[in-house]
Length: 390
Image (cartoon, rainbow, N blue to C red):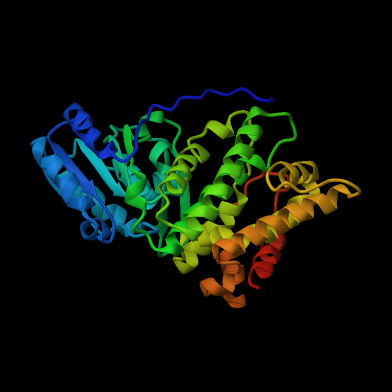
């Protein structure tokens, strides 16, 4: 196991069907002024909003609301939320929703007391906060991003068509607590459920497909992937299966709470490619990842052949007898492709309304990392996007 690292994760998790009750234990730790942050309003339709409001009122909190946070939160929406939180003198931001709502709340938390433009400071220069941070708590209603237990935040600048994520270094930006009730995720449409499942899977892949040493993190990742594949198949047939949905929810948290990144360089190029597409199309995040994943992995496979072979054998159960390493690795990716189609994921960019004419523009806003098996140049990025069209 290579490298030196520090691991700290201060987020307190409450998991299970009765987990919302523990909001009563957390709220007294914060001041009177709470800003409730949520999305398009589904929490009002399914009753979660009323449950949370009742608990807030029981704890005598002064409540302001930031409603309408979109799946790809925009810079304009961030500015709006900052103003609401400032005017309310927020003591706590309570995010009730999926990963986008949690991501957005963290962006607001580091911006309320910031004297600079948050886009320039946090998403262009990638500076760290030097101001007081408003704490965040989460009540999760959709799984996928792992935002409930990490310090990541993603914001889209509609004018520049850039969708950029910043994983903050200070653990204080992680949610102070997160409430995970698998029942809350069961009202999601199938499209959103499977999109979240693939987001989880790709988070693990981004950390798995890097380095060549014998790393404990890789063994953990393989177990998480096998668990997710198993539970996803059950949930795909029966979305109301509590055991499958609870396992998916728990896997999502451990996929991106930085544990399996320990001792790893990590890759993240599928996310950079997918986020560039999302900045142009506003498409669902997990589906942008699904559309570009296989062309990317087939492109870099020769540079990380041993790991792709291991992935095929340990995750997908591919046999090795009488086969060349490349053949084994290719069978693993073929098995992954079959599983993706089984779930009903988007398999190409054309389904997301990307055209050939858009490819070079999307390539221009793609951030390139050099921590995977192959650093991509612009021509390779364009080639991968073109292969992703069909």
